Image 1 (cartoon, rainbow, N blue to C red):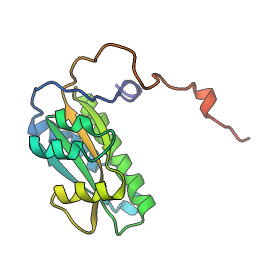
Image 2 (image 1 turned 45 degrees about the vertical axis):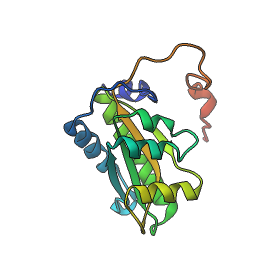
Image 3 (image 1 turned 120 degrees about the vertical axis):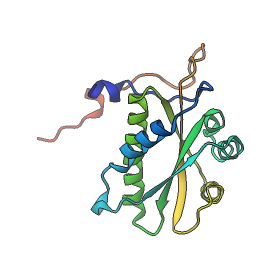
Image 4 (image 1 turned 45 degrees about the horizontal axis):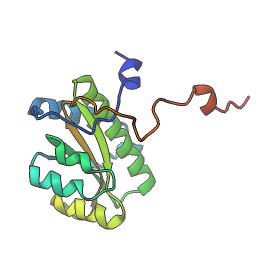
Length: 170
């Protein structure tokens, strides 16, 4: 397990119709809630969405959110907008990454969706039935990965070598 779990994580945008169990959702939410947060504020709430119509509406709120419509379940990440935006958003990203790694460990695929601009984030928040202080800018689709489509990917594959990414100060 270990680093291989992290290095083998890939975004999944196509899912089979196999259900995601309540136990699986609980497990990934447990992993998300254990993410660290500045001053242990835990500035997040998680909204679990299984309703097909609602998933379809959410999928239209972001340029790259279409995968939400085909997912058996999505988790919307609500952040307390009254807290320091930079800290709270960073902490929410930590929770999202925990959730996605836990899903991968369970054999589930996942992919984040961003709701931008601000009007679309407000719409996602309203669709989730939340209001102030909560703001939803991220949704994460979950499901059993469908076979990858053939052809040439539109997005570059792989990672830059570590030597190209690190600046070491002595």
